[in-house]
Length: 246
Ligand code: PGA
Image (cartoon, rainbow, N blue to C red; front, side):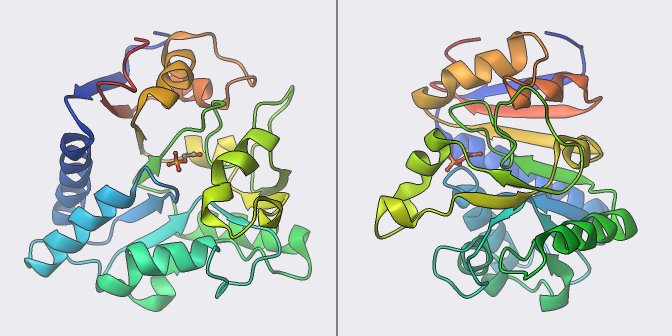
């Protein structure tokens, strides 16, 4: 490993991953009800969010004073589009906890001026950040948020062309594969690395190679997740299959 600051936990199954990840977030919100949470979409965090809803319903945690920032949003999808990440977050978390509507932030992928939207989101992160805990999944190709493998990576919020592999992996959320947007607004690696703590979560054998490259490979923009090796505080939670390459 590049640094000694990564803590890697491998659990027997994904339910245990979800419990541990939710436990970390519960602990943070208990210590600091005003925490700034960095949230992710995709299949990986769904079980974590389900447990946070359960904990909220049990009276164990409140989001009343929390602030959230999501990593990314598709370009061209209005917030109310069923496949938008706005919709995903409402369904999977926001509508089911007591987070005030004006405390959750996502990039607006339907903005008329996308460059201006990137500047707006960057400024908002700067004003309300730093993010205390950033939840991150990892793409099969080693991407984090929508930072795809490339010779160079942008540091700040930017518009990105999605990798074909990513569009295929995300086609399951759309009626037809060609409906998957070709671009997204995403936090850059610099935004992600500013989080105080990063919680990287991966499940399943399909992620094992990306996880191995991210944690054990060289630091390279060919595997954007490998840049996490430069961060002082990364907690990695894997199920057995995702950890197979370690
Ligand atoms: P997934 O996506 O959670 O749906 O596997 C993760 C990612 O692409 O970052």
